[in-house]
Image 1 (tube, rainbow, N blue to C red):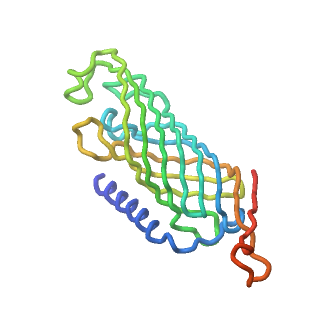
Image 2: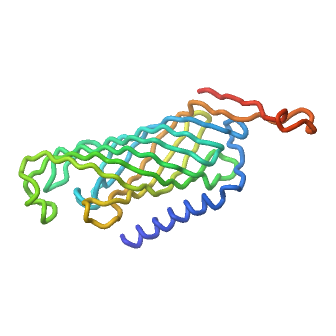
Image 3: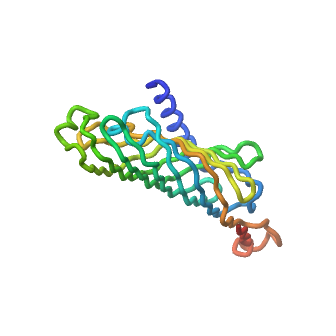
Length: 238
């Protein structure tokens, strides 16, 4: 398990470093969108599978939830994604019942690989997450100190801040696309705990392209000043 986590972390770090290191390299125009796309805005939804916060809930138990997102892509490479994930109500036996968990994510993603001339793209992501967690303590301690901190039947609430690091892909078929992401969340379960992995999350779903704003081909006299050679904007609405 430690080897798999280590290899995945190394791959994610390589993705981010590779992405920033290749910032000046050109990316081919994606089929189905305006040439030299400047801005693309899309919304999406999907399923999220997460360990939730491993400092409270048992390690290795994966919980499902619904993910909604708004994505902004700038100049084909730089992008931002705002996400909201609502985990389905669940229990974490033997300590916790009636758990509700929500995640709010803001990520920067950087396109680093186009697959041939297709719309399949891979990207690295880094960002931040804020998680709200609420559960009912059932009287059986999950860790030794729980028995001193909570009373049976007590409603307990936690808020966490964490750092996201991961990889993802997307593939558009004109206005409809598929996406998938895998990310680690790093943080502290308790104030005195070490900074470490507190959550692992995989998300898969669909996107709808709302608008794609791009530049058209240059035309006219090449001897004109740069001001007159600006490309006209082309808008592709959903």
